[in-house]
Image (cartoon, rainbow over the protein chains, first blue to last red):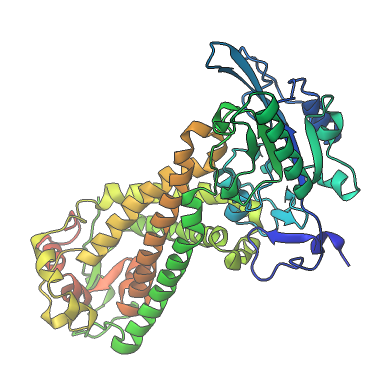
Length: 296
Length: 228
């Protein structure tokens, strides 16, 4: 019995039932990123490259400490860097580890038309199965975090797997393993939320960050990566972390009401022309001249 | 450009009058349009619904269908542009069309004897033409955005979102037109299907469906007409 199939709870582009839904009891896994203790060392970036055997992506310098503008098909873990002015005229260095958020309600999976190209495991990990990917890029449109990236050479899309291969074996993801400050934690979603809230309380009560809080956006059903932010009211300051992400309105419109209406309209058209033929039949021209040898 | 004529073949001993309705080039372009549209329709439906994804498997698998869909789409649009260049004058709505349109109920009920005479195309054909033309433009523009979605910057993401909706709505409109077009061209209007294959219709057919065009053809005499 394939354990892999049984552990799948959501399948993209899939007609019919999901084989694994409700058949296994598994904890939700979660990464906790405490941006207040990240020093921007980028050990997690390198650990990700190493563990996943990714060919090195070209870096680019834009006067900050950021390795490149955004994640790439071969660069799944990027420290986003921002200099944020403070009210007292000083400056804060905000560093946020950007990667796939492993949404509970993944927009990529909702948009994907290819059967099994994107799956969600019972432990919450959203994983791309490149074997089934057709390279359409719908996931790029569906993702509210701009994470899936297209590889023009293979015509497939790639992103962070939350080290599903390691997690299956009871190991923590490579980025977590490499973090030297302990700003990255890995565990069950409940444990991580608890830890994150404790840390946010600590920041509010003892460090003067009155707006400190936890980022676990409800618009996508919560995420498998949660952040502790010094200022949870302004997530955009952390390298463009969306304030209230959700599956884009157009994708939701496209994938449900429009699909139902479209299917009804197409079916209605086919039924309509059939009924017309049964009721009125063909238009036949009465020929006044008799036919020659040519066909009409 | 679009010609029709040469009704008589006296040398071949055929008593029935024949009228050239579609030139060889028109027929070739039409069937190129039909084949390319059929391909993008089939593969598009595969990407539209998981219950139709098997169509992509039939035509070589998902990645292959995805690879060729935009190229066949461009080819289809090229045929649409050719038709625009060739037929746009024939496709203008005339006074005769408006009179005819008031009796469209008679046309639907096959009471064609009540219909006023019209030119080379009826208003339904003309509306189908413009539907495919404008929807084609929308499909190409949105399709290019979807083709290169990974190159659309995050700050322009509204374009990603708009493109999928425009593509789907325009495609559904063409499908509606396509269903009616195929039904009328094959089952409903007898003689229409052979006309787009061999190009000719009978004189009676032309008089019944497109009398003004027929009279224009007859008036100008064989061989050098300009189309209605």
